[in-house]
Image (cartoon, rainbow, N blue to C red; front, side):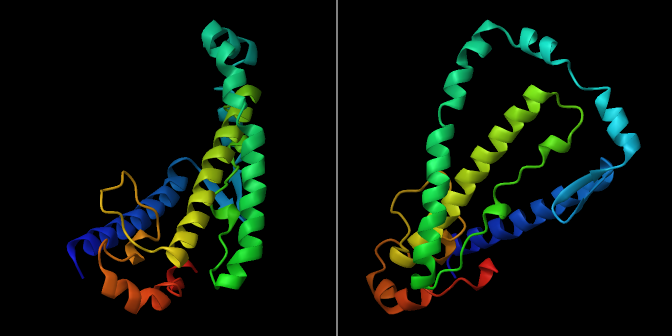
Length: 194
């Protein structure tokens, strides 16, 4: 194992630790997650409602320029929906042929902020949009990462800003022998996705 593989392994461990810590926060803010649904006690819900900003005040406090930019924020919705559908269809049709395990959208697109009673309607809609869009990008990235692992699992010569979940399985740039001898095995290395 080289130093890059060692660092990528540490990143995997840290990401698992982060997910554990994020789950542990539930106790601090008095909620539970049951069957992917968030549950607050009635007392906590009542306390949250006291913090909700009135929508008129929220809009007024946002200012003219923020309101003016809203159409530009919402413009990517239609392309995002098309991207979502085409990537879903792509993996539905192609992944079984390649033997790649499908990516579960629900693991990436998490829409749960509507349960927060301290958000007004506008904030909830905005949170829905951000949750969907960022989740979609994560979902698409994972589908692309698994595709890249199958078709071209070679690391880049130049450092990349952010590596995806499958990068640690890739061959070193310039390792022609390793690539030719190990490609078939790497194409089947998806045990860690389950």
